[in-house]
Image (cartoon, rainbow, N blue to C red; front, top):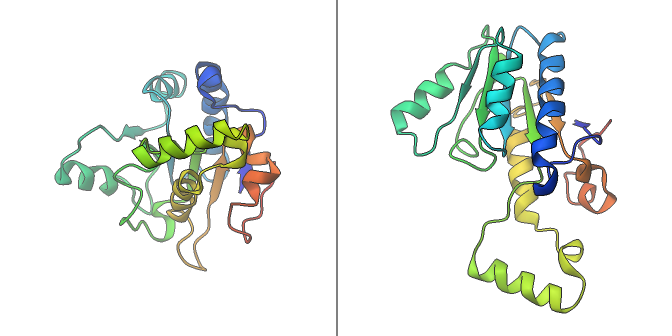
Amino acid sequence: MRVARHISTRYAHRAGSLAPIVKLMAAQFKSSLATTRLLQQLRLPARGADLFEAQCPQVPSWRQSSRMSEAEQAQFLARFTPDGQGIGFAVLGGSFAEGIDLPGGRLIGAFIATLGCRRSTRVNEQMKQRLRALRRGLRLHLPVSRLQKVVQAAGRVIRTPSDRGVVHLMDDRFARAEVQRLLPSWWRLSS
């Protein structure tokens, strides 16, 4: 697990984070992992994929689209082959978050850009309002459900003891002690 402490994907910084994200992805692709596929779990606008494709046209890439049919989802996943090469763009917590298995060399990495978005529900909004009233805000309550999506995305890479891969956590907030305490204790985080 690698933490990209130099990247912030907060809403205010999102546009400026695209170039360093693309640079990190391109560098990882050119490394020794370049012969296998990487899945990029990116919760950024399509501009992130657009920028990657413009700056790295030699790298095959494909994107999850909204409301993909089951056949389209199957086609997306079929591109992840043991001897394949490329980067797939998918939404963190989207339709590929659970119930997929890309064993062995079919998926050898994930780039996770953001802590994940909290689902907007009535209960979550009430909790947020009460915490703000207590003046502790979101620092007190970093929703575990947001990090659950991150753990699920990383879990697509390492499913069994024999799987190998790399996971890049691309947001400076992953370096915070209060966030790291909520991540699995067996994760070895490095910069």
